[in-house]
Length: 80
Image (cartoon, rainbow, N blue to C red; front, side):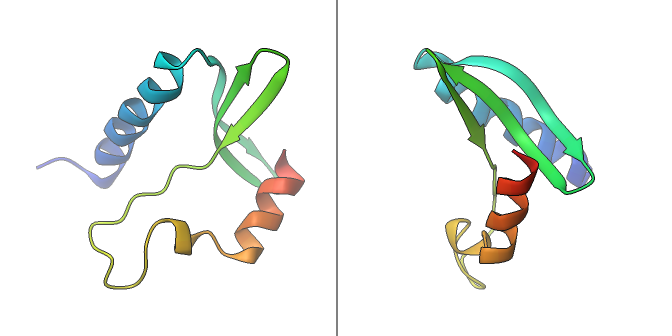
């Protein structure tokens, strides 16, 4: 049975393929700073793109989008 980390790593690899197939270049994965973590940093021409990956097994407690709270957004901004 796969571990939660293995499931997350597989999901991250799958999620990475979409922007790469649309011309974005991977800069780094799982950037960790004191303020937080950014899952993917990619480049689209001259623009840096910061990607937060979220996965939910069900929407019983809200969607993946809804799980990115204001506090999480602020940590992402500070980390970026």
